[in-house]
Structure formats: structure tokens, C-alpha cells
Image (cartoon, rainbow, N blue to C red; front, side):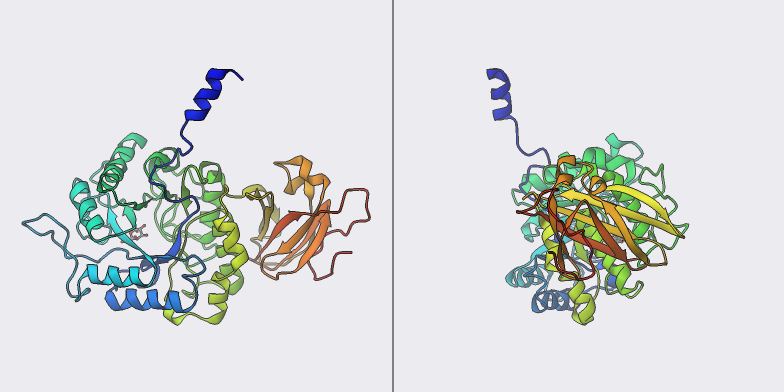
Length: 434
Ligand code: GLA
């Protein structure tokens, strides 16, 4: 390598994403929309923040409290031009609530839209970027979810959309306050190709719906590259299928595909379906933003979103897992995901999308380590991140997955094995390794 090449490498920027220093791993937290829609006020938000703290979720990393749409009055202040918080919803003032949230140890997330109005018809920030960014920074926000409604036709090409979102990015940077910038542009105009230089995360689909795989015409596209209408009422598997090819566009040095807020606890899915929802959002590195009433959450659902091992994979400073294959299985499909973690461990997940159990399917290491074939030669200690059972496996893993369920392991290279020894072949039914 020449001296000039070395010099260029030495001065090349290490961070290619929006350089606000945020988002080396995807954010975690809570958002008001999925459970409360417009029915928000100070009590709802503070009660959920308190519950997040009391249940230990804050300590586990869920450190953003994000207030969604419908927080302001219908008109800007005619004199200052600022958006005005609704005094009936926030009788003590929004700043007072934000201070209380900060004092509990959380970061605070705000919502606006790159349009004339927000999706619910409140004032949006299009062409008011500087004044709104300054107002938000004065209120000490730490995160901005920035929607796409009422954009006055300023979309339809990547460049036009980029410029509309870039305006707020620049306005936020100008405030000098580090603010995580979360685009909510629903995957229009190939947002994954241009968002990373202006934002920390970007929504890639229409709005989520609390259903595992129900087809709904209101979410008309089955693939990510939807020509126009992204819609809403998108099921979990619809979103997984859209996010999977886009895994290559996200990572610690670019930013994160946002698969939308979680539905766990809202009642539309079984425990196993919620487990798949949570595991997929974690291994694909979507933001993990709870969207339920945390103050009234079942112990089962609380335990689900508190799985430390799954959160550790999500927060690992590495790119998302990739889907190695998706194979027909009875009335649906089985999916294999695999990805390297920053310390050399691997995460492996098998999703059973079908309505019958998957029994003793052997997954060869040549598939699991398709992206690093050398690894297939070794024995690996495999920890099931849901049952917590650990086995040592070589050459393959054997999987059993309930209908609509997911099995996920963290694999660590075994220290004392090679192919010639007498290996245990992986099986997740509780046997110990020899
Ligand atoms: C859009 C967004 C949702 C939510 C609503 C609020 O539909 O995609 O996540 O913020 O607007 O009106």
C-alpha cells in the first residue's frame, strides 16, 4: 500500500452516517401511538414513564419516552409562529413534563411531520424547520420522529424527499443539541439509499398492525420496493419480508431501518407470535420501541421484552443478521437468519411461519456460516436465548420450532474442539454437551 493511500485512509472519516454521534446501536424506548393514538396527555405519558422505570425496562436500555402525534394546538402562535402545546393535555406545560421525564433518567422524544400538517392534522414543520428545531431544542428534546403526511407533493423522487428531510436535519444540527433524528417516511422514494447522511433511522414500511401475517389490502405491497402506496395495517411478517433485503443498508456506521413500533401487549397476537415479533426486530436491528400500556402489562409480556440476551444481540455494535434462506414449509415458510456479532459470536434464528410445528429440522453449518465458511469447521457452544439451554454443536443444529414461533441462539466458538473429535451434534431439547 502506498504512502498516499495510507494517508487517505488515515484521514478518511470513520462515520459516514449523520455525524451527530448518536445511534451506534438502534434506539430503545416507548412511544404513545400504537396504544393511545391521539388520546394522550401528561398523565398517560408520565404513568408509562414511571412504569418503564419501576418494571426495570429503563435499566435494560429502554431509555426513550416518545410522545407521538396530537400534542399541540391546531394553530401556531400567530405572533411567534411557534407550535403551541395543548394546554388541556399538558396543564403544567410540556417543558415541565419533559423535565420530569429527564429526572427519571429518560431521554425525551418529540414528533412532527415534514408536511404542512401532521398525519392527524396538527401543524407540521415543513418550511418551519428552523423555528421548530429551535423550539424543540429549547424544550430539551433528545429524539425527533419526523413523519411524511401532507407533504404537498414534495415527494416522488429520492432527491425531492431527501431535500425535504435534509432541511430538518440541518436545522437540528444548527441547534447544537444532539437529537436522534428518526425519519418516518414509510419507505417511500427508496429512503434506505439516501437517509444515512441526514438521519439516524428511517421507517421502511407503512404502519404496523397487531397481527402476525394477516393480509390487508390497506398495506398493498409484499416487497420493500413498493412503487407508490405503502399504506398501513402491515402485519409482522409483511414487515419482516420487506426489512430482510434492506439489512445490507443498515449498520453502526450508517443508521437503522425502522420496522415500526412494537405491538407486544396490545392483544392481537399469541405469545409465540409476539416472541417472533420481538426476536425479528432485535436481530434485524430495528429500533425497539414499545407501543403498549406499560403500566398494565402482563408478567408474561414484560418478561418477553425484558430478555437480556436478545437485547444484548440488538445492542451489539454490529450489522443486522441476514436471511440465508426462506424455504416452503407446509402452508407457509421457514426462514434462516444468521449474522456475526462484534466479539466473534454469531446469532442464528429460525422462524417457523407455518401453522404446524417444525420438528427436528437439521440446519447445516454450511448454511449458518454461509458468509464465513471457515467457521463451519469448528464446534460451537449454542445458547438458546429463550429457553437459556446451552449445547455444543458441530456440523449442524437441530431445531424444533412451534407454529409462528422463532428459535434463536447465540453461538460462541467452542474452545476445545475440532472436526475430528467425538462431537455432540446440536439438539435443543435439553441434553447437555458431552
Ligand atoms: C403516521 C405514522 C405513525 C404515527 C401516525 C400519527 O401514520 O406512520 O407511526 O406517527 O402517523 O398520526
